[in-house]
Image 1 (cartoon, rainbow, N blue to C red):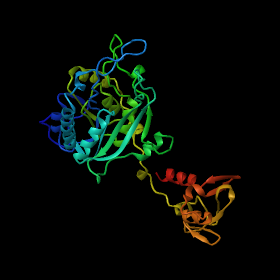
Image 2: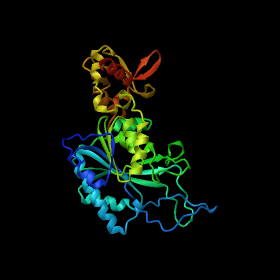
Image 3: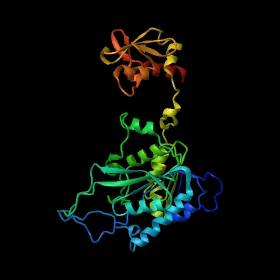
Image 4: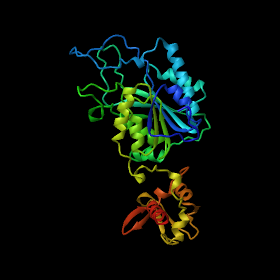
Amino acid sequence: MASERGKNPDGDRVCVGDCVELLRGLPEGCADLIFADPPYNLQLGGNLYRPNNSRVDGVEDEWDRFDDQKAYDAFTRDWLAAARHALADDGSLWVIGSYHNIYRVGAILQDLGFWILNDIIWRKTNPMPNFRGRRFTNAHETLLWAAKDKDARYTFNYQSMKALNDDLQMRSDWFIPICGGAERLRDDEGQKLHSTQKPEALLHRVILASSKPGDLVVDPFFGSGTTGAVAKRLRRRWLGFERDPRYAEIAEERIAKVQPADPEAVAVMAKRDEPRIPFGWLVEHGLLEPGTPLYGPGKRWSARVRSDGTVIADKARGSIHQVGAAVQGAPSCNGWTFWHINVEGSLVPIDLLRQKLRARLH
């Protein structure tokens, strides 16, 4: 990896080795998105049992053990600095963690110059209970979304996130089940192949929000390959770094079975890509005649269309937005949804005419 040259390293593969060295070996600024699920440093002491005395299958892996917080901080600073080298100036970095580590990660992120855009709360629909009954149930994890600096022109597919959420703004609390059922990778004896496998739904949202088809997504703690599986399905290029050869093999086998979606199906929805349709164009293209009456909700207000694309209502004249605000005595108004026309006895918002014209001109 260290010998690669050029802005676009070969993608769609798992590299076995230390993530710090591998990140440093990437061409500077080549990664459009980095998703990191580092060790949480859980520091669990002893075994945990359910009330029926069955043992809880928790995280006991050697890779999650550090001598102390100082050692963990040094590890975190090393991989974040290497990630900063690999990340494009307009790229995004996502890091997931729990209360055991995420605050230390956040502080080091800021020390290194990253600009935190959001902290996302992943609310688990089916969290593991607190069997000892001494604390609240740990029902969430935290994701930090950061840009390289506060002026970075990072990717955020706002319209796609809104569409994913029934046309409502996507909130910073995500209600997603933990990885289970058929998605959870297990061996022939039913044992988990990786103790901290993340659900594909979580990575789908991260990758869809912060990248475009063809972008390079890098995961320095690749594990069972969830990031690569979702990235491949969404037609992003991907690179996974994993120091355990067995995990790398599991990930490769998993991703090989994934089929990329149709290119048209993964195109991100961006408002700026839609042609802007001024109201006057509806008049120009014959969708509205000068003099056509417009009505507010319930026909409480009315106005008439003028030939230059303005409207007039009593003493108010101007754009559909200005006149809509004036008749209501409101500070602002979205005229596209406020004003309606009469179509065979039914009031229809003029925004439908805008959509019709947009489709005609597209």
